[in-house]
Image 1 (tube, one colour):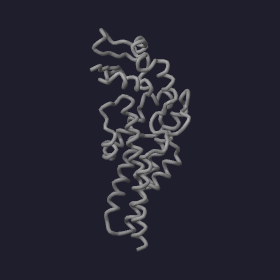
Image 2 (tube, rainbow, N blue to C red):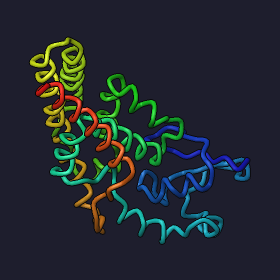
Image 3 (cartoon, helix red, strand yellow):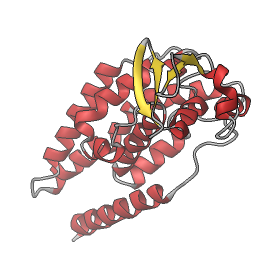
Image 4 (cartoon, one colour):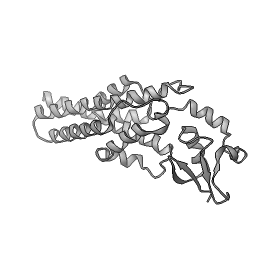
Length: 236
């Protein structure tokens, strides 16, 4: 198996395949000057000196051009984040978390399981905020202004309360829980604002925000079911 190891923040990372290594270049996580090694090399070598070897996958020049126009993390308008969170009854927050873990997986964390990190989002929201906050590719362009710890703590608390308040057989209490669920999105805004600002500083900023996808549709369907059930219960 053609396993590659690479240097990241002064530490050895990997193993990854050649294709995954090229993806890391495209994402901007590593650069042509990054040291890499596999069993075919006698010593750690800069990627730039392996240009001929990497031509079969992608040239360094092409890879860098793609990296300059590739979005970092889930690049969406703030208005869509708020609208989708409201229409989906908060399910879009899980989708948001899932997608950003996917970006991190593509940036050099091959052992991440985005689905499960989104499913158990309460346990992984702080690590996600922390990774976005300290992301080297993003920090090189713009320093974050949000505080990962306090934001994550507030999100965990409000989410927990919203779940608890959705249990009692009391429509008033349920509505309070719903309000907390919808207001949770405010805690994502500082992070999304940073993500969008970073993407706009790229040499070739992405021409478009991330497109609408099947995930959006699923979130809307789930949210619609809950909205209809809640309205029927409220006016029954």
